[in-house]
Length: 461
Image 1 (cartoon, helix red, strand yellow):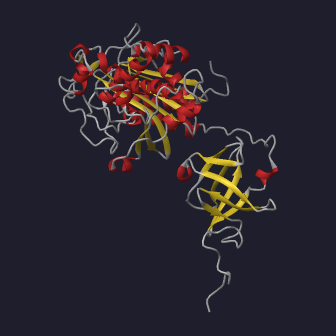
Image 2 (image 1 turned 90 degrees about the vertical axis):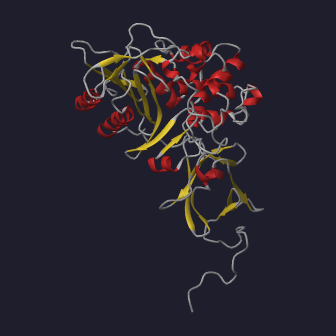
Image 3 (image 1 turned 180 degrees about the vertical axis):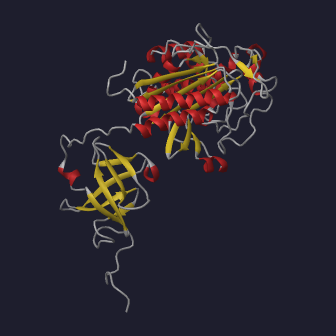
């Protein structure tokens, strides 16, 4: 249920409908469904279909392919948050004997574990999982194609290993753990390992004629954690809200923020394309926006989940053809349409409830050498530090409760900021990861390493 404030304008709704109509027609797909989320609510659902008089609604299941990986990543991060494992642990510590055990759990999540992209033949997406009953059958004789941790190389077998890890540490099948720990708490009632009516059939569309061929629908067995799930636009819209805001019953907001951060070494082409990979999430720079989410494909189906956290807008697009519309572009366009037509309203400015005087006196202008910075107090009790003009090192800092702050992002992520005081209690300078920030450029008597020339500032001659 949306409120009048959340409802989209008629012109925005028409633009969204037009975009998916073009995608369905030009992409030559039997059906295409989409949804848009804003402010934590689904505000639009659209469908286009080749069947007259029928349009799939938000309850119709489609196969979502590799969006399944994001669900598997959530299960692994739950284990980390509970202290059962560390992301720096090698897989061998918890799941021995795989021949890929030197890869860490974080590297497997970020596709930088050096594993092959696919399992050995036959093509796993079009054959039953019973052909690969053991992990050795999924990985093959030589699972590693690249040095561990050196490059991002997308790997479906890597997520099979993560699914097996979940099963080993939970003592239950992956699908049971997923149901209990993610699907039920988030209310995703139409997301499942296997389809139930109503659901779409998967089709291949002939590239040179308007005819179709039914695709097989196989149970993927051990590969299920990499791409088995079926879902709906309604369920994936709820999942998008979770990935933006977290849910303490599943993962807190800090952990989903961690999932959205780049975690893998980028290839040169990825840098050019503005692409990266986090912990179970793809990142892409499009139209000046940082988008996170995941795409998915299996024979007969394409899927895309796109989230713009900054603008608080997300889009889900599902279709039932093997190849056709480029859904990543459709998803980003749906987000752009809403973000540009109806910009997010900023929260009203409100004064801080209270402020400690010893913190307030740190606010204002500081200099690192001759570079001017500003320190500001933030509403969450922390501080931010950034250049007064132009580009430069900037970060938010979290208060530690002892008069110091820890950097949350950028160059100063994890670094300590503290105010160094003189014996009389006045502030001498700020120490940020050993860098000295003074109230005046190279201020004398403020602890500048190497000292300050006693002749002071001077001109030429």
